[in-house]
Length: 383
Ligand SMILES: Cc1cc2nc3c(=O)[nH]c(=O)nc-3n(C[C@H](O)[C@H](O)[C@H](O)COP(=O)(O)OP(=O)(O)OC[C@H]3O[C@@H](n4cnc5c(N)ncnc54)[C@H](O)[C@@H]3O)c2cc1C
Image 1: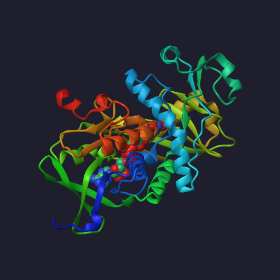
Image 2: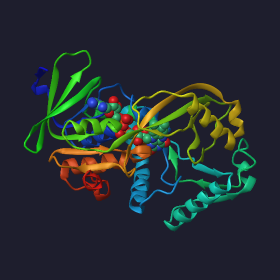
Image 3: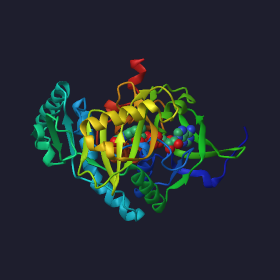
Image 4: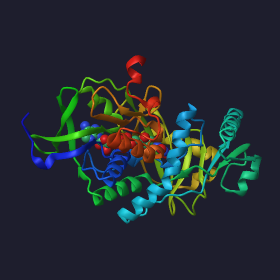
């Protein structure tokens, strides 16, 4: 295929993928003075970042190993600053809320799981409140009277991930980032052990465009593996399909309410979203009868009042999962290709810290957190 190369396609850094991860990195880099271009084959929020539930929840489950748990809480702690920056630059409200999460348990095994979370997190110095039996109904009367144990987690927050991603894009544009939407990256031109340029095919065009850059950041979510493959790099990323239902409610829930994989998240006045499901392997984003059934069954068990919620719409998205469920961050075999992908169920939570460490790596080679645990090289020996 023919390809064109013009001087306007030269950036210091090209970011492949404009989801929450790529957009947050682009903003950080542009704010540090870099010339940044983001290339995305879809429209804003067409990937997992538009489909998520928006929980910023490092304490809602036991996150292992401890280094990763600390990485997650550090990212949660960066949220207020990021939100203030995005809201100021974009002039958009991203609905960031810090009203806490309620973890609830009815069955014996669920109570054991919550006790485990309680012990592990208090040992780490994190704060949680134990609430026994139906005392939880004082927090929200719509809950099941069969709840035996609850943990109130003040440190787990949430955000409207779609608004935040759009806000990051707008903030990026206002800071000088150039976004190319509907342009699929098709491959890379190499010179020795470096990428010289990124090839992309804009929708409807017959010729590819080449974008040259000093650094390239791969942030293409669950599609990152396919792009790495074009460079002969094996990146074991698989899509994990998850579904969400949006409801209209009378009045609003005061907190996020969770029991394992089932949760309800107050999104905006009169709107609540509920999730979720997890199915690995396919890149298809269909909403299924089985998925809707299991979400409704799961949430009405802990929140019987949900039977009166009015259905508005449902959607599905693909979480980028890895073999060890940890993200892939840092440099690999090529000198100027940085990976920022594989965030699985935690990409919204981890966006601020990913942006910080990847920008530090790209600009000064010295990230403020060790990235050893997330190195792309770990899979070379794990095969
Ligand atoms: C149902 C569900 C609920 C979730 N809930 C939460 C939650 O509560 N909290 C949390 O922290 N996380 C949650 N997640 C996970 C979170 O959504 C992801 O980890 C995060 O969005 C990943 O962001 P990303 O930018 O890496 O990927 P994406 O948002 O998928 O972005 C990748 C981008 O790359 C682009 N792309 C792909 N291929 C190419 C190509 N060839 N050329 C150019 N561009 C390309 C895509 O178009 C896309 O825009 C949830 C996910 C799902 C599905």
